[in-house]
Amino acid sequence: MAQVSVSRADVERLVRDVLSRQLGLTAAPSPAPAATRNPLVVNISARHAHLSQEHLEILFGAGAQLEVQKDLYQDGYFAAKQTVAVVGPRRRMLPEVRVLGPCRGATQVELAFTDGISLGLDLPVRVSGDIAGTAGCLLVGPKGVVELQEGVIRAARHVHMGPEDLAYYGCQNGDFFHLRVESPGCTTVLEDLLVRAGKGIKLEVHLDTDEGNAINLEKATKVELIKPEPCGCHK
Image (cartoon, rainbow, N blue to C red):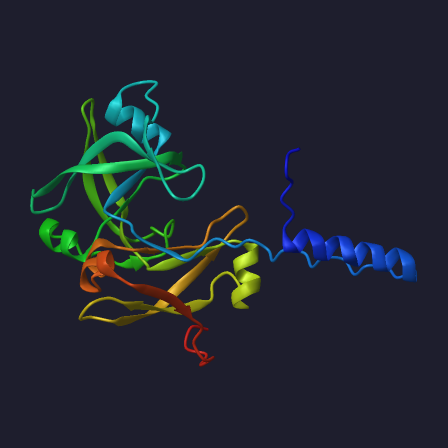
């Protein structure tokens, strides 16, 4: 005869069921599992370009479509196979700047501070999409050239949050946090981390290459978001 293994948990559950029926008791429901939240992820957002469909076709040919090379952490976003050359006023260039997809309504190039120095561009720190009055550049592709009058920025460091993250941290879109990073020899707190919220968004911090290198992010052992005390300085 085959032996059946019964765990201690199974025995305890059976005993509770029998006692409940005999005593007319209603068994207390098992507690619902805690809501699953995405872990805090901190990624370096290396230099890249977002293209409008119009500019994509000028640079890569009529009817061109972005081709997926690699999916990004946020669902629906990807690094494309296509790259462009970014040329600054000093006629120095960054030869292979990755294009990210999908296409946007307006073309935008996001670079690090040292990239701007190399190209001779004074790059303002802006929230992605806020490009009015920013620097311009030349974009060069295999089929054509686009001269941008504006659209080259340093992206403000930020954290993407979904609704469950907003509730957990007690904040809202547009708030600011500190990011504490523990890494060998250079534990650091980065202030003014902007909250960018949306549905279907995973919890993720974006830093540029300069910031990531400065804090030795690659070897970080711990990262945490810290809600600053209200001071009214961002109103």
